[in-house]
Figure 1: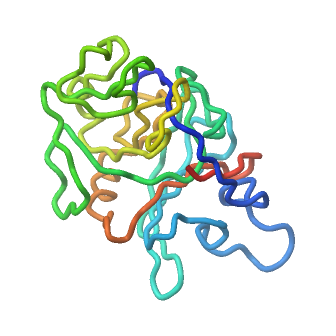
Figure 2: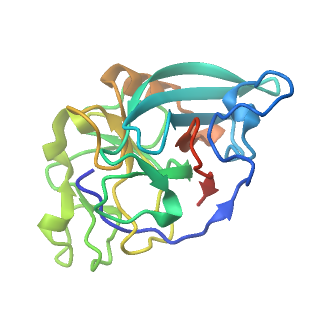
Length: 240
């Protein structure tokens, strides 16, 4: 995603005041179980991706994907992750153009890529074409949406020409931040995608091999979600 732009209607439902840090161990008591079992809300599906940074100012952390099996959450894989160049911020407070990754619990509407879907991919997958754009223009009716071609009311300078992102968008998942009812000024074009050279403009990124494994693993029938948060900060998880 380019230097972030706004968008997303706040349908904020605080998942849990006690879940101030994604992955925080409970004070006292028995040893902590797997991260999803300590979360008040995992989206209601049988799959979950967690993206955890040490602190809100961090630009790196870990992405882990989980399966719900026999009433328990089981880790299916993990990889190093990168976050926004300015760290993380609570989703409802995010502003477009701040290079921050929004924390929260989000759906994953569909996948896309400049390359064909990895073998085994069952998730809805859109191929990137020469006229594929992601509109981030606050004045456009297509704000925070994929468009083919770019509409007249979406300025090219306020949109991502997806094919130009090459290997970074070889494979990606759309993150449902500010997506269902976009709020102008909150941000657009938040994805889980392949690493570039460094920190992102607000997305979450992982190595190319990990992105391929995630897409081959993701099952739309299992309704996977992405939870973004910190392991030791004061970031509440808000659901949109």
